[in-house]
Image (cartoon, rainbow over all chains, first blue to last red; front, top):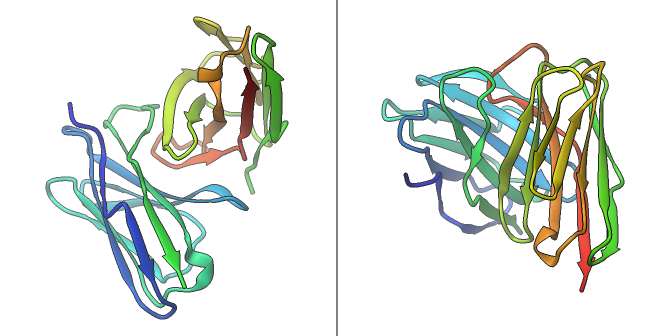
Amino acid sequence: KAGVTQTPRYLIKTRGQQVTLSCSPISGHRSVSWYQQTPGQGLQFLFEYFSETQRNKGNFPGRFSGRQFSNSRSEMNVSTLELGDSALYLCASSPVSERSPLHFGNGTRLTVT
Amino acid sequence: GQQVMQIPQYQHVQEGEDFTTYCNSSTTLSNIQWYKQRPGGHPVFLIQLVKSGEVKKQKRLTFQFGEAKKNSSLHITATQTTDVGTYFCAGPAGSSNTGKLIFGQGTTLQVKP
């Protein structure tokens, strides 16, 4: 089975711009979660989508949004980028069953200048 | 809010020495998961513990879940250079069994050959 695929791998944007990141989950996985990883804050939960619906949301401002498509692929969008948004953005998928572990993609490294 | 704390933050060992990382949750957990992230990589699921007092082994790695289901540990016997990386524990947020996990800050292990 192919793993979780995230595109692009690297992005450089300037403050004020917006960015869209993409994630294709493992085939058959219907839950997609997004995490932000920074050296200072570690791994922080952004949101989770299941069957095209946002099931959970973390404590991030409204500039961070996402969606999931009928094929379970997901995108996250960050508008009005700030320097502090520079981070590794990780997507993780899991099956429907309870207590399923997360399968992470390689991440998108976003640098905001 | 719910917190998961890990100590130590960093550990440098000589190859062949043992290593232990400890994880403590501010709340009782339904389960705890451990992930390993190699330098430049993404978190990879290692194991999940569900039962109070549970102990699981994977070759040189021993995982324990505390009786109160609020703490956990990972012990590596006779470390090897392939063990280098950051080890994260993570627990479900609240009573959720979804993709929303609260991660510890991680313990970064360096192994000197």
